[in-house]
Image: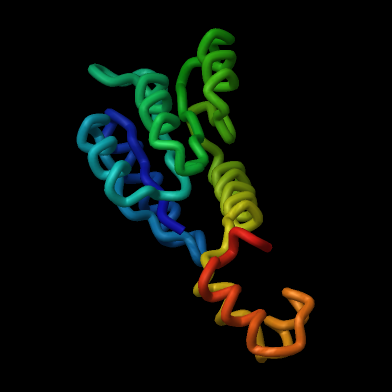
Length: 166
C-alpha cells in the first residue's frame, strides 16, 4: 500500500518517512512532501491508499488538501497530523471523513496502529476486478456454480458481461 506524507516541516516529514520505512511491513512510503501542491499533483496520479497530512501549512492547508482529495473520490484514508489540540480542527477533520487524527509529537506505536487499521480497512473495502475474480476461480465448475448453470454458457455470459451481474 502506498503512503504519502505531507508536512511543511521537513524534519517531521523525513522522520515519519524513516519510521514507516523501517517499522512497517507491506507498507510502502511512496513519498514525503513539504509542499501541498506538489503532493496533490502526485496524489492525483498515484492514488495512494493512505495520506498523512499536517493541518496547518502555508498555502494549501491540510483541510483544503483533504477537500480536493475527497473530490477525486477514490477512497483514500486521510490521517490529519497537528500540533494544535483545537476542537475546530478536529471537527473539520471529522466533517471531511478523516480516517484518524494524530497530535504531534506523534507516538510511534500510535502511528503504526493507525496505519495498520487504515491498511485493514482498505483491504476489506477493495472491490476485485473481473480479472482477479477469474484468477480466483479454480475451474469451469466454479464459474458454472456461480451462475447456476452446468455448461459453458455460464462462462460465456460471465466473460461477456463481467462482474455486473454478480
